Length: 354
Image 1 (cartoon, rainbow, N blue to C red):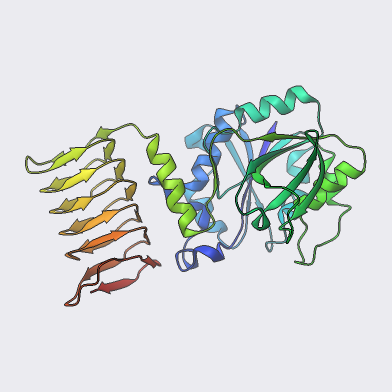
Image 2: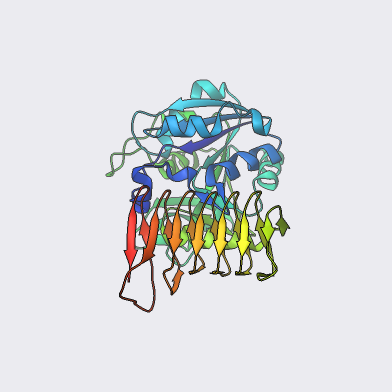
């Protein structure tokens, strides 16, 4: 069995961060989202992986390489434009070479991975298997309508959803899906929709099974989703300390501190992850914060935030919360002082706060 990971989207909902970075490489708990997908495939015993890439192909290739670090084989499949999930399947036909495969959206996170889903599909004898989750806003997703547990209809982002069961970004297919993607027409969005391809399978007598996700699942397409995914991953993190913590500092709960990092006169309340070669001085780092490599935080308070590498938060005197901060960003104090900060800034930016 092979895998197809989609990593070609533009990430417009995460701009300005994604003006200069692939959305699938934005870290959750200091690890790029795309790496979780690759690890999920390896854990399921899948080592032959195709990655569909678009405009950010160079960055993705540089980060992932040939897959050697995970013990997998990576093949890159260029997509000239984001023409839909079914189009990504269509251009992967040669790579699949008739084998069944898992399709995984590279900006999704699933707590329990894909091992049980893969095993269920292999035992079922189905032509396709979709993963579903109950969501409060089904109009924002592809939605499934079931009849006594059987998939009878799929609708892409319906105005009037037939259910609250959204398609999670993991699909299982055998080679019959290529008949479907080569038969459907572009939607009103000028894309080949995967929902239309699966609907084709249903209407033409192919067997489509569904499975409702047991654990959590997050589509990390928006800032609030990134922060929630970060929270969920940190909740399962084991504490470890490879840095230096002075006698004036206090560490509470699950806290991970990377090599070369220094905690000076600070209070760290987990779950928190701090990368390598960071300096946290006279500061408070609150729960659900991910601090990436070489970040400096001085005389400031940060919680429920993601701060990417080489950034600085200096002397802001108040608490920064619910924030996603890009690379090489400087946030520092000015004369005025508001009560709260909620910030999203892109790479190589500088922000003064009051």
